[in-house]
Structure formats: C-alpha cells, structure tokens
Image 1 (cartoon, rainbow, N blue to C red):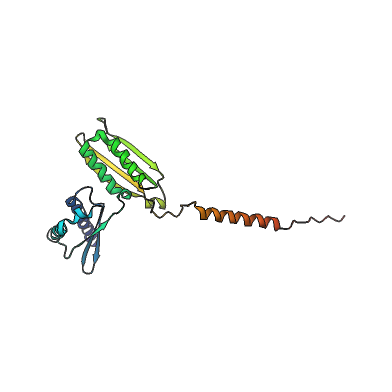
Image 2 (cartoon, rainbow, N blue to C red):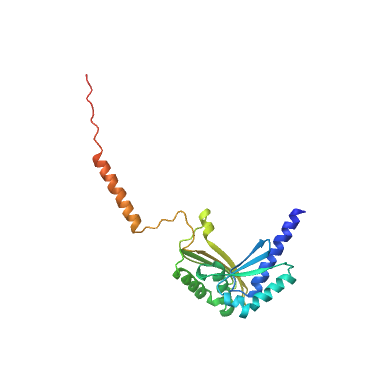
Length: 227
C-alpha cells in the first residue's frame, strides 16, 4: 500500500514538472525542482530567460499558480525563479537550442548547428563538451554523429560532475535525438591540479631543501674487517 502511494506521489510530481516545461516552452527552462515545506509546495524553475517566464507584472506566474491549484490539486504552490547566468554550461539549454535549430532550419544544417554550439560552449570556458545527434541525418537511414572537444569525465565518481541532458527534434525526415554533456570550469574536481606560479615556487623550494639535505648528510664509513 505504501509503495503504491510513493509511486503515485512521484508520478504526480513528474507530471507537474513536464507540464511546466511544456507550458513555458522549449529553450526557456533547464530544470524544474519541487520542494515540500510546512507552508506548501515550493516550485523552483531554473531558466536563462526569467523575463519571459515571469511575464509582464508576473501574469504568467499567476496563471501557472492557478493551474497548479486547480488541475494538480496543490494546496499552496509558490513558484520561484532561479536565473542561469551562464547558459553555455547548462546541457539542457544547449540541447534545446540545437533541437529548435533543427526544427527551424532542417536536418541538413545539423553540422553547422552542432559545431556552433560546441564552439560557444568551449568559448565560454568549459573544460570539455560532447554533442551526439541520432536520427536521419542527412541520409534516409538513421545514423549517429558525435561532436566533441576538450576534456570530459566518462567513468567513476568524477563523471557525476558532468552536466548531461537530452532533447528531441521533430523534423520532416523524422525524429532526431540530441544528447549534450558539458564539463563546467566551476565543477568540483578532486583530481584537478592547477599549475600556477605559487605551485611552481613551492616545488622549487622543496627541491632546494632536498638538495641541501643530501649535501649535509654524512657519508657512511666502512669498517675494515679484522683478520
């Protein structure tokens, strides 16, 4: 019985997130997070275009709040906007922009769109990025294309800091799947070593101390065996 309640709860939460993304539109929302507080539900919308999401005088937020109350039966939903100041490091926004570009210009422009997006991500300072397109591009048979640059974690705990997202583009030849992975320069990496002037000076001092220690160290005198 408890399992059914948990499944229904997660299903309703997923429906709320998908509805908000669809209502606001592709390319405007990166992620939707639902937090439960004693005074009601707090819905955090991460976006790089807060003005379009809020609307004039907050009218879009007010409409969305009313729908959440009536359609999804939320008691006291409060919508908060979280602005994304560096959209180039957000994989979902980049994937949505590629999907919108494919739907607008057609699948024949997929290489231009992919390379421009990759250049934009790396130009902003990302450590690495990967774009994978799958579908009828441009032949009649489905094929997968990979565009990558820089350094990207693939396995282990360090791979969890890589931001990954998916999007779908509906083109005339068929459906195209987009996968984007971005390693932000702000991502916490325990195995990352930054070689700067401070580190170089520290290494030089350590080498100097080791050299001096070897010079001071007395030589061992071998005793002759008495026959």
